[in-house]
Amino acid sequence: MPKNKVSEYSSTASNNTDIGGINIAEGCAPSGINNAIRELMAQLKDMQSGTDGDGFTVGGAFTCSGAAVFSSTVALGATATATTQSPNDNTTKVATTAYVDTAVGGSTRLADPGANGVVVRTASATTTARTITAGTGISVTNGNGVSGNPTITNTGVTSVDGSTGAVTLDIGAKIAALSYGAVGTYVLGYIYNTSVTEGSTYAGSDISPAGHVALSAVTADAQAGMDATRGSSTLSGTWRAMGRVNSSSGSSRTRITLFLRIS
Image: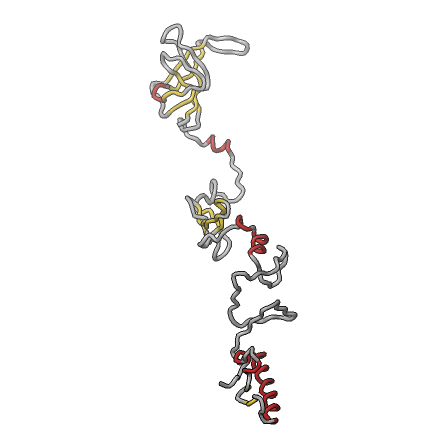
């Protein structure tokens, strides 16, 4: 069998009696030596260019002083090692497990959450993908951040009192616009035969609008007796007492104080 490439050579010198079919055995023709040298050079060139398809095994250290270009998959054996690079080394070198652990945190590094979205750490070396979702009056665009930055938009309250942006409210005008007996309004009220304690709440159905009247004409620096008057109707809702009246000396005594409607 002619020896047409290096992998077909024998490590036993006496077994190499031809090269590329050229006889180089003992007693060969002198002209065969010239042809054998030329054939050897051609085979070495094929090996160098890779056209002979031969594998290449290195039993010792392999040193490459130039760029190494691999056109196919490079498989490293189980015992293959490489120099551990420093964490700030961004060159294209073989990275060992030690280098990766140093560079990205080892066993505490964040894992791929397995889905698109905002990455959230839920435990040591554990992540999950979250998505910003819309709520009442809120819309969200790109909630998982894949197509762009998430955008949150207020779709509910767009104005206050017909205004947008920075709003100044005239509270006095708002209070003045409240109708009689509405929540937030006050009334001077009368409760029959019941003591009234400030801060306590009372049903509007127990309260009648009331007032005081002078028993005689009042002039400057003069005093006059006062009596109470109250309406025949009662109020609606729930009211908070803003003053105090006790129920002593008979049920007919006037018990008038200020009330605030709270509901």
